Image (cartoon, rainbow, N blue to C red; front, side, top):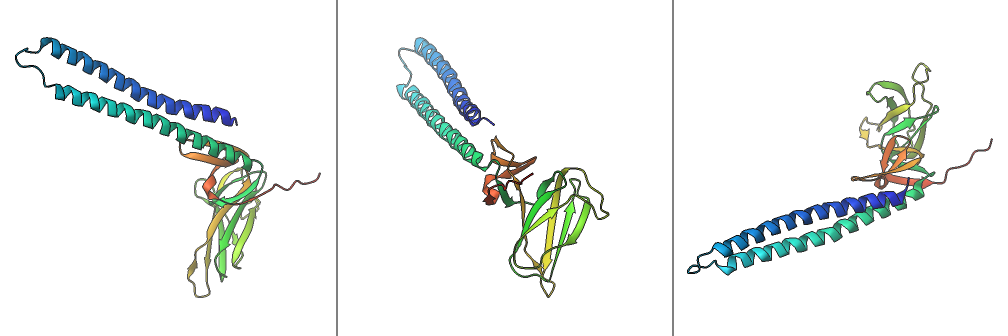
Length: 226
């Protein structure tokens, strides 16, 4: 991904929007001047136009022009801020992250998740569903308080390997008297690319988009020997 290309496109979009507004104002101002000139030429010398009327309109055009100029600068500042965010996000490439979420990609027989229990539970159940919402796997989870890793091998309850794709985890826990415990779900994996659109900057775990604000943990990828 070329960050300079992102910056140029965003600055170009900001400049284009401001230029469009400026062009419309110019057109309207030209029309106003033509009408004003026509009125002045055909006015009754014994009953001339009230100069205050068109003076007020000139002032209004001036105020709109100033607002457009201010918006130009604001749009450019926002575009630059977004570009800087994208540039900062590049530092995530190749890093292992854990982020708030419950949908991750199954790839090469592995999908990584995490969940956090705020207190010790009496029971914890883990289910995995496919993109259509169909339950494909269920097991018991850790009951201790704290954050726990869960790596699914991509097999269903009968041991059949499922196709790669997006799968969603759901973790439910309850205490000794059967009351539910609030569980935080996280997805984990290596950031493979960065995406940027009008909504913000996203870290891609293959095809899963993660907002940078959702990241809770970052660690270097551990190289494995051959």
